[in-house]
Length: 321
Image (cartoon, rainbow, N blue to C red; front, top):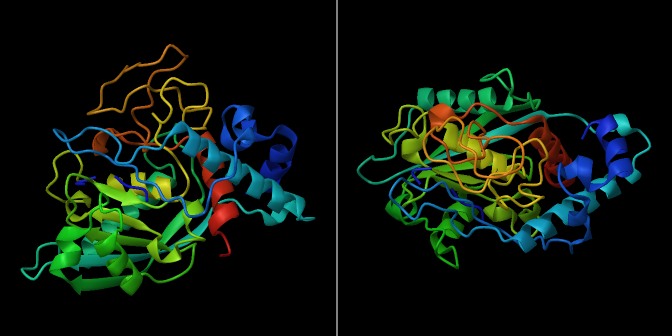
């Protein structure tokens, strides 16, 4: 499972078949040789609280990343070869959002409709490239389909990614999740030591009832978590849900996060240190990228390469499903 507390177009399909993994994944063609990923693989990617363990919760190994990349490449090739009209591979699309608000019996965790509306706007600003001239407009638009509210002390305090059996999480999600692979379900709870967590798109087939994003209730716009209360935890986690890795995945290796236009990055970022540069390869660390661990106020972009990866993952795993 993927975790982080208190934090395809026509031309694309044709290019994928011609150039292989370089264009699709933005990285090295060598990744295409890895074995396919099991759909049961669910991973966790964490934004750590200052003073906590400071790294990924259940970090992805290079082998896991390679398997996921290879599976994605295989699926996009299969889909492209099966189409005679490549224009059918659309760019972006509308994503329905179901927001599940969990509070405890004292009312902690309650959230107004106005706050949820602000959170959806933050999500759309991020995926729409509205925060920077360097940002990619992904074409994805998030529309609030439904808001569901629950009072449940156990769900509110005991969703724990460290639980190998995901007992409470599974109970909460299986009883409340709605929609298909293309529906973004978001749960807000009180998470211990994490900002939130999300499933990768390849895991939907084997565990559809677990699909979605969980965030700490304090990270929404106006929350009390200093530096992480502008609502961008959901943008970060939705990036994972759409198939993106952290920008520092793989460190200074040649494949890194599988996206060519995010410079290699050895370590995650804390704060917003302009000029941070942890790898000898060209380019400073992409501290303004939503897939780093920077402060919310530092985040302002997805790259065109990340957009290409999200488009391919959407087509392969979520669109029309």
